[in-house]
Image 1 (cartoon, one colour):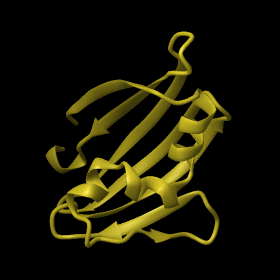
Image 2 (spheres, helix red, strand yellow):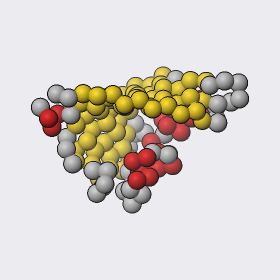
Image 3 (cartoon, one colour):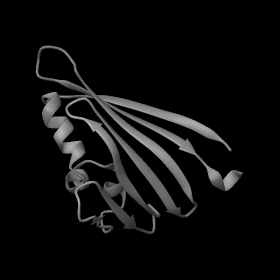
Image 4 (spheres, one colour):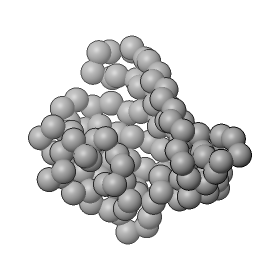
Length: 119
């Protein structure tokens, strides 16, 4: 089964705790998630607990994002399941670090894909 990893990081002019809180709250993802911004008419459907959401769209397909674990202020691990246009499961990890003395944070987004559609 083909696998690959994508890593991206960005320096953000905000304290690490503030950035962590923005990423941890799925209800705020519409403000920054490139997938939700790409198809703004798709509104996430939030689960009763604050630990996940699901969506369905024409561009972004369909799937769900679930929180698996977190270390407050440091990291968030999620399970991303795509249902359309093909089925696959990804591990999505966010890591947060202080980046200097000017109240900047370094946010890292690591996605590990395994495409079952090619097996």
